[in-house]
Amino acid sequence: MKFEITILGSGSALPTIKRRPSAHFVNCNERYVLIDCGEGTQLQLRKYKIKFQRIELILITHLHGDHYFGLVGLLSSMHLLGRKQKMQIIGPEGLEELIRPQLEIGGAYLNFELEFKALSYPTSEIVYEDNVIEVASIPLKHRIPTHGFIVSEKKRLLSLNKSIFDMHELSVALIPSIREGKDVVLEDGSVIPNHMLTLPPEKPKKYAYCSDTLYRESLIEYITGVDLLYHEATFLDIEKDRAKKTFHTTAAQAGVLAKKALVGQLMIGHFSSRYDDVTEHLKEASIYFENVITAEEGMVVRL
Image 1 (cartoon, rainbow, N blue to C red):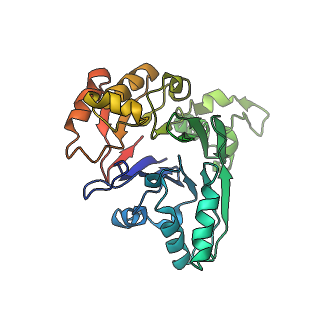
Image 2 (spheres, rainbow, N blue to C red):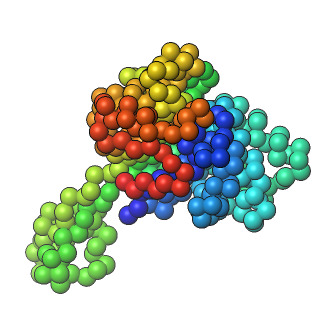
Image 3 (cartoon, rainbow, N blue to C red):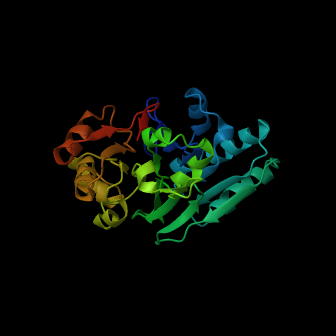
């Protein structure tokens, strides 16, 4: 089982040589999700050897350009590379009206279907699920309607107690039903209870992505206990008045929120281009929450 996040962009509105605008690639047990698609995202995908066509779902948090300006170019490249598989795009009201005309006016009639789903602000809802993952939207507080997302594993099947299974010399054909919780009935009518053949499954893992937002303790009800929280930390605490005015968060505030939400690990990002070095961001967040890292391009975080 694999649950990992590759950082494609960790900066805020103004791209720099070191940091690109927001974009995270998520591989949750072979479900491939792109969260935000800032300018140059397709180049970052190439740089870090992630295949475009693997992406099945794109999530856009809000309609500030540093979170979606790379989308038209990425879709166009997917078309040129022969994509046939449908692409699902989930984002704010108005996203479809921004993207489709750019493609059509330029004559880029895609060979694959685009399916848009508009988020309802300021609600939280399950926006995607299959038998492996679930994606929920969570309302953030920014200058325009903005959502974060939680990508979760679905509840796992029971683990097989191999030593007991082998001891009874059972057929491998029984494994699926055993992992679903069923007992085994032998030919002589005797029953092997399921609890003897299985072990408790691992706890499903969760990744929360909270982009541009004011510090909001109301988020705690949604993100409590997640394994990894990505939270914006655009400014240092000395700029907290500016952070409030622009509806952003400081590194210290991100640390406070992580502590109150009892998360496993905090990753801060969306750094303002005014900072050449984010060592102080790490220090400020670490005052309040010990297990914190800074998002860096090319970094792969495994849950």
